[in-house]
Image (cartoon, one colour):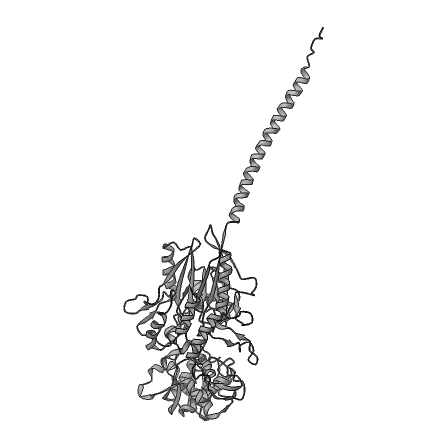
Length: 590
């Protein structure tokens, strides 16, 4: 017989409770797993947004080439033993290398120039810029804007040169006075498709151009305010779907950008009613919102890293001049948001500027042959020796320098004048000790300015000097006299001593003074010169560099010295004659 089954109610309750607890644990676990899965999804989504695809845009940039596509020694590094620079041929080799590397990595490349391709090295000047445009075609520039020196041979001549360009000329603020339309040689902007991102490139030229050009050379043209023009076209390109804005501007970043920003923006001098100079690059970046990248020119100083405008966070780039460098920066663009996420420079360079030493950047053979051929044609006779420099004739800084004083002495001798003056920027290079060629003379005086003599009173001559030592002006290069001034005195009353031809000046005496036709057009702030009657002006039709070449030919062995012709002395007081004159003739005009 089978035994009767026993009943265990307590055990059944325990088992039932265990099962319920287990079910609760399983449900709790399931809910936790749901939360974890949801968190994992969030993390993955967030991570994917952080790791979204990135476009790496290579931008190669130049500015202020000034004809510098030829190979030259880097005298700015070492005048005695200058390392050779490869010029355009070395730049071409690097451009080719970057494009090859970028193609392999599926990275886009842009090659841009911010103006002043013309005037400087003979190959640029003697061909009216045509050789430089032909070179730019060879290396396939993507865009260029217009600089003020493009007008040095006149607008009519510039038209012919720009017609050779196989790439767009972007410039939004140079218009025809009659119609208000942008000059036919340029477009205000282009929009490039960069792997699905629309990048607008707007061009601008400095408003200073009319202040730095012969009026006849820009006749019929108007240079519109850069900030208002930029705002207008930024709106237009955004309406057309532009994601990013790049401005290619012949506007300079100042030499000391931090102090300039402090003075002009932080301290508010940008709003001064009597501000003489129009907007530069930092003014534009501050005033105009929406500019992502600003590639600059006009002021010949390079920045190894971009300067970021503190308010609008625009990145500003600027290269050195005369073809000695090329810039290269990689802009990182977020593919999803189509915004700039950062930038970097190639790992093998320090900063975004490369000095084109031939040992580091071996010149492209084909490009070099073509440049050499154009150079040989442009420079016929420029290797002829005109004399010898006994010492190194340095340009230095300030109103007095060995080469600057020599140029002024040459102008006096060429004309037999009593006094000579010239703007500081008219002298552009040193002359090394030893034999001097006409090409050396050209490097010092590359512009086509002609010398002019004027018969003016001592009173007017003093006014001219006062203008150039008042406000923030930095003076003149002079010869034939002695000038002492005190910057602590009131504007237009700062000259404390003035001698001409060894004698104290006389307000009513008529002096023969030599200068250039460039200054006679009212440039460098000397609008007072435009008021001189034609009967008092004699045009010599001699280019200023020919006067210097003639000086070398005559003297054979040439030297120079720093003397007492120009001096700042902030302790000096006016002589009785000048003091009396100042009391009667105080002026507040610039």
